[in-house]
Length: 303
Image (cartoon, rainbow, N blue to C red; front, side):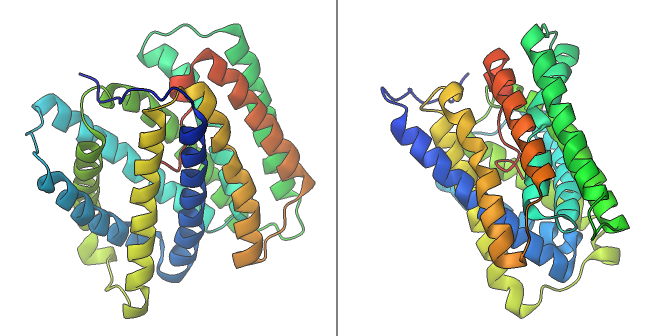
């Protein structure tokens, strides 16, 4: 059973909404970076997941919820475990890198997903996907070398780069799982059960790692939760009403937003290596999207 809504006659409105969703999620990334610096990645994502579970739970139970099958529950749980690794690694790394660099490195996920789809789903790897992956790989190397030769290079930058790339690899597998999950459950069901499982996973080490949320950070946590859920909803709405080929290019506006947000909130500049590397990665992703647009979905929509 598919939960995809009828597509719009014109993709203009979904494209505009999707672009706005990317802006919202880019703002969420910037806010999450500030929170991770303030209280650490574990407490930030734990509190955000708990708030998101409450909000999505209200939305789930306010409708006419249907009990998911055991197959759905297993898939929700598996994907939540993968997302747990993704968000811990991604936001931990993002706190140690310029915002634009972290976002640019995350773009490589669809390229990895093309090869995972061949292994997991038996799909054929087309020649253009190979060229696209090579362009993306060169882009990653340029960005990484640029970070390592920067005058402000530190071990934090090295480990931050490794963490974002690791989260991207896990997210590529997550993209493959998303293809199955989208045909089995509604977006509200997915968000609710995903955040419930995430909250449980984060609460397990709570006695050793959790700390009370400072009063002055309650509203910022509520804010990033609202931004995350709103961005996810708007992107789901857009992808349900327009073909991916029209929407995929809007994802790369995140790099533009990241440059502006990183400069305004953190005083971050952007090196020429980041610009060139991001350009190659984006070019590779756009080429790959012609091969398999269903795997060219953004990392921000899920984290």
